[in-house]
Image (cartoon, rainbow, N blue to C red; front, side, top):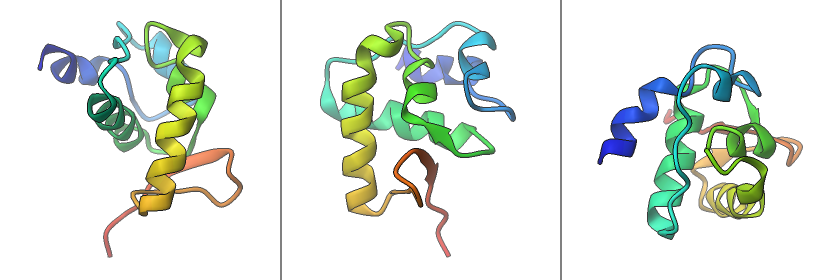
Length: 96
C-alpha cells in the first residue's frame, strides 16, 4: 500500500530513463501480482512508450530486475494490456 502511494514520485511526462531521477524509486516486489501492478502503474504514468530498461530503472533494484520486468511486459502484451509495435518500447493500451 505505501509503495503504491509512492508511485506519484516516479513517472512524469518525460518517461524514459528520467523516471528514476524524479524521486525515490520503488522497491520491486517479490510477489508476481504486485510486480504486474507496479509495472502497469509505471506505464500508466508515462506519456510516452518506455523500454523494459527504463521501466526497470524505475525500481530501486534497477537493472537487476530487468528479466522480471521483461517477463511482466511480455505477459502483459500477450494478455492485451500493453502494446508494443517493435518489442522494445511498451505503452499501456488505451480502451476504445
